Length: 387
Ligand code: NZQ
Ligand code: ZN
Image 1 (tube, helix red, strand yellow):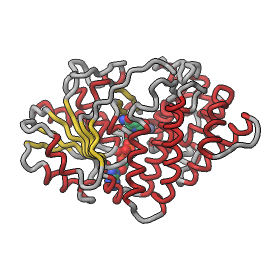
Image 2 (image 1 turned 135 degrees about the vertical axis):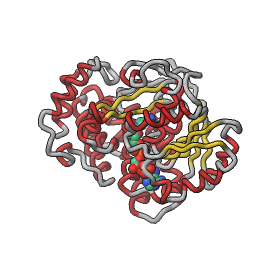
Image 3 (image 1 turned 120 degrees about the horizontal axis):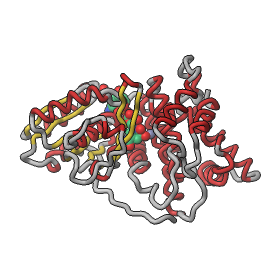
Image 4 (image 1 turned 90 degrees about the vertical axis):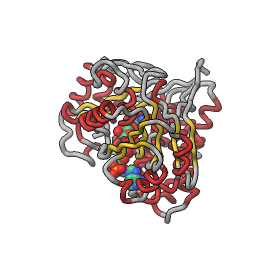
């Protein structure tokens, strides 16, 4: 097992009817900015619940943060933060609203150009961001309990990630009942995103980190178990709760401690969102099978372990089991109603592999993945395998 340090300061408040607990968590004298997305919270009653809880607080609002939070929109929110002397941010939404809020928390206390936080390797340290909390409305990203964020700039077709130990939410409220109003397509995205988060921290090479492997395999199996009831049956609180907690656990830092991680699937997937606007989760389904086939020799031991422990594939050589595991993974993605080929999302993919290769080169991402050996040329090949 590799050496590691682990600190996660986010307080999780999980369960039914927990939104009113906001009143106990927010600083009493703070000037609060409540941030939300395109309006789903106004239709499903979450807005009313939050507003009722905030009635004795000094609160401004900023709505309209789009999916794949947009830099230009966030800069409008930053003006409000500065003009109204906001000192606490409250994100009410999914990954996009929470990520946008993290960017704002950092930008509010950053002296240079705000875009530098994303375009340069700026790591936001503790005490260097505004304090913020979240009410999660869409389980998927794990942003509610981690310190990373991703912001897009449509003008330049960029989608960049940043973060640092100063960007953990102070608290996050996780009420599984918010799931009732989420469209099935978004629920499928949530399963897909969380599943890939686990894969990125697991599908590398064997290590002695037995507990991390077993926790990862448990999250994968639980996501598999809840996915069909979630997508096909009537709303069920326990299914919703298990799904929600899997998403948080998949990316709150725990399973990546002491092990090598990959993250190439996300890095390439972000380029597909930036160029084609494909949902984040679906870009992962397009890239993951090709990424694993491309690095088959490096990853086959772990692929075979995944196949055996998660899908019960015990027959055949390591190579056989590893190949069957990738097929099983693809079948699982299809069972969520998610396509796994780029050509199923766009006809406009000619030249994209070259463009992504160049982007990786320009950003100096010349050796990524767990072995730091995936070159821009390799990335180009992986994208082409995904057509
Ligand atoms: O905008 P509104 O109207 O609220 O609608 C949203 C949005 O259209 C809707 N929604 C959210 N909660 C709902 C609901 N609809 C009905 N009922 C509810 N309770 O769902 C749509 C998608 O929301 P979004 O927040 O964009 O989805 P998600 O949580 O999947 O977040 C995606 C973003 O997170 C980034 C992605 O790249 C993408 O930009 N990620 C963030 C990560 C992190 N911070 O750790 C890691 C991830 O890998 C990912 O990159
Ligand atoms: Zn993701």
